[in-house]
Image 1: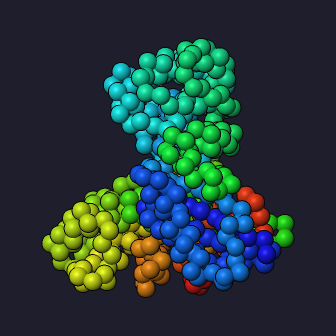
Image 2: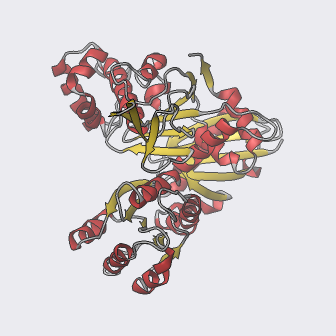
Length: 467
């Protein structure tokens, strides 16, 4: 047996997964509350104790290699700045999200003194400073470097803008912790985000872990390799592409519905399909992640209500509009309540179905591209913004509200293309793969060490439902 223990320090739960690499088999999973506020080892040891109860006595967890990812203590919080909102600022945002960060603010054009105060209050883990193509505009990024030099808070600054003035920016930021990287957009509309993502991961490994107290677990693990969303991204890319020995599923999407946020992933080029369609803005990366910070099942239930509307939630749940508003207020202030628990309101199950369906629909719509119809002398044409995902045929879903719901297929149905929104580019029809055992982040970690094993386990463990 070649035993590996994969650990996910989540914001609420610490999840542990035991894998036998030699047999390419999942041995067991367990979870306990994350205890980052005291000693993160406490939650880890509780999860390990629960795992030992379900594993054969011959399995020696002490001898296992241990690797971890983390979104504890707020995850990896980033602020970015660029020049034009739809160009370098958007490139910076895409790079940060793809690296597994929670982007708490995106600034465009020149920073102001008020912006500096807001940055101070946001307390980012990393600031990504971009702006200008190589050889292009210098004024904006130089101005922003000068403004950031006045910041009282200490945080790493990742410089990834116009290479023609990189040294000048470094000089302006002298005395601060600055990392220099290739430009996220060296030429107009040309993304170059992989070097930035690698550097973000490097900073995360060497700086952020210690700052969030995660180094307390260092003696129990071989290494915290990446933020949890980056692990999920790695798992989805592996599942889509496959390996030299195993075929992947092809283009796919994934939805991770949490209590505070909803993450959506797409592994697809998403290029325009018709000759009468032209692309607007940046060509997006094959592996894309978006985060809806206002959409979640508990802390952000009010965001779902605001996005979907009371009447829609009432129609989905069968409750009255007044009941919907009353229950949304209740779950927002009682974030630990679960449908079916002793003493809970029986209507919560109906509300949770409606919240999940509306959250998935909203998040998928925001992630997917859209078309705008225009009229030309030769007839109607279309302008595409974002990815065309209509032909994506696989959807992976995770998150408690989805995987523990008996109506998963009905929830997913809300995420698909509808004639009610004819210019949305969401998938038309999908096979559903349900992550019942919360293994995706663990498999993303394992993908870094043994991709064939990780892929084999995902193909075995993800629960399949045909379109």
